[in-house]
Image (cartoon, rainbow, N blue to C red; front, side, top):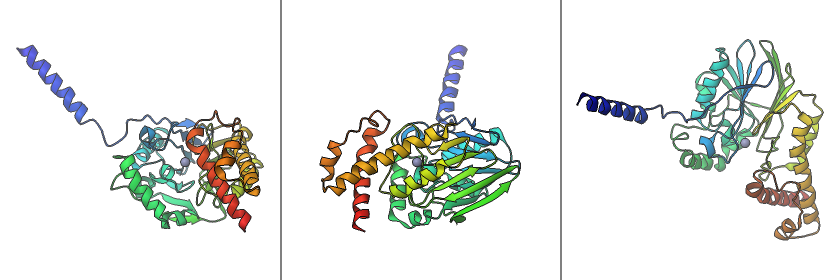
Length: 316
Ligand SMILES: [Zn+2]
């Protein structure tokens, strides 16, 4: 009888334990990886925006000796809390500044966690356009459904403390930084942070690793020019917005650059020869890119966006 009671008690305890386990955070292990002396990254998993509780993008943090600088805040406040826990595994220095690479949901929805801690949030100038747009509100509605419960009624679109225009340099502790506003490349506004002391570039989605980039309907001409400029910066490592960081900067830049170049060439020829999009798309030999992840999901809409933007450029 006692044994049965004991068994019942244990079963009940296990049940209570499962029912009341910490459900306020997603079940994800976020292990910081050292990129260089001061720079650490948590790398998101491959997948679409709502896979793995939205943990599909990278966040980086720089431990300076006089506080921490964070670059990107992941796709939900819950993920940002895990990021903060990951930072605490490395240092107990306070978070001073947060630079956001661009205002897309997967990179800035965690910003409120750091803002509430008193960190200063700095965004590229184009983020103001995004915050003023209907797209930003529609995306929040969509994510409250698709990433429920991690994005919910308490999730807010954080207005940055300031917008970066042009570039700025600063030093915190032992580390010198240079932040650059890249204008509209992958999004309404893109920002790159160079950790000059370690020669590490935090590129955001200007550079994609190991998958087809997402072009949207943006200014691919400017983007390409920006990439060509970045190649001239002597860096030891690049941390892209998604995928693995690389110590082979040229190789990492090459995929995005070759893809943009190819896309602009084939779609440019189609526009020039008045070939309708569908016909032009089917005629292109995509074999250099077809094996890359996200080709099926992203390539056609990328091509269409570039086709339309070149059409607009040609009308100017
Ligand atoms: Zn992204």
